[in-house]
Image: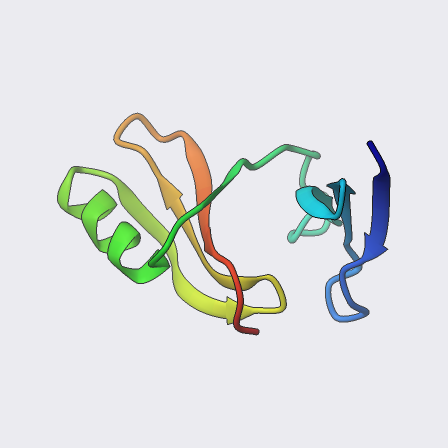
Length: 93
């Protein structure tokens, strides 16, 4: 097993952690100055736009619609109870 720590790009200030060449986690600065540190889980999906639409139709909330990033197409969502998570469509950017 090999571990990897890679710079995610100067625009993000983040790093990507990987195992055996596959990204498994990322660490970055809090998006809002002074905000407490937190973890946000990202689920890999085939279509971030479709998943965001489906989540909303099932009572979830779209905090940030799907957008292209250096890590693929990503949407920030909340479940009906308010739990935050993200979906990421690999590729793109």
